Amino acid sequence: MNRLIALLLAMFTASSAFAGHWCDALAADPPNENPLLVAEQTKQCELSKKPGARLGATAKWVRESSSWGEPDHINTTITPRGRFEQWVYDDNQYLYFTNGRLTGIQQ
Image 1 (tube, rainbow, N blue to C red):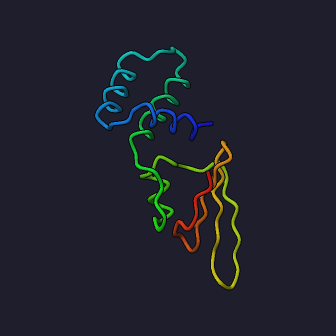
Image 2: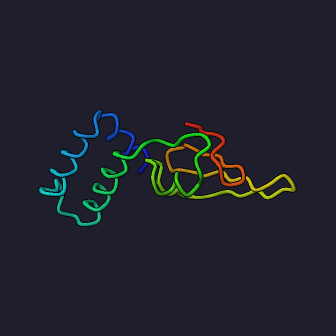
């Protein structure tokens, strides 16, 4: 769900300048007084300004610098060929890593 909100925000904020203005307006006058909801909206707004995941990116970069952010769950498989991770997001989207590098995106 969080990834879906970020994706929708990114679609509606086609330019980073508009996204910045929208986030500034959200911070100045939150549409909801629930502090947890305001914090989540602010987080999603900030994520919407970040770029999407790119094949070959490191797991650290995807987690910290892309719009995907922190996964909801990570499935890990270790074999003689290396470490394989499936990052699971709550909107049925997945990222696949091989030895710390992004090798697949399933949306």
